[in-house]
Amino acid sequence: MPTYEYLCERCGRFEEFAPISAQKREKCPTCETKVERVIGAGGGFLFKGSGFYTTDYRSPDYKKQVKSETKPKETPPAVKS
Image (cartoon, rainbow, N blue to C red):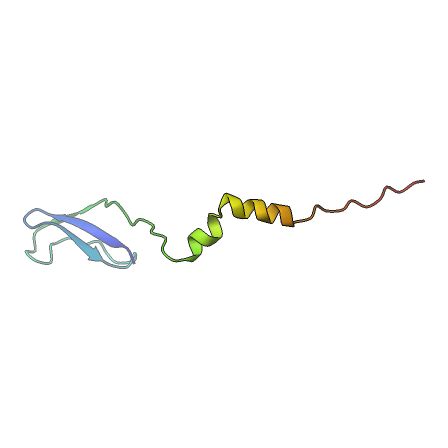
């Protein structure tokens, strides 16, 4: 569910966690004054965990080692007619 940001004429800014299908808020939950929905910054991505660095960003030494261990594909001998 997204977080919507509103601007109240009296109270200032506040956020509301609501489903996309919900009607937009018309009045402030605190003072019942008219509110206006504000475009927020949105959510950022934060990649945490051990898997991202290990699998996506291998060291140059590791890449060299893998390259030296893999054998090139053998091409089949040419067919003489």
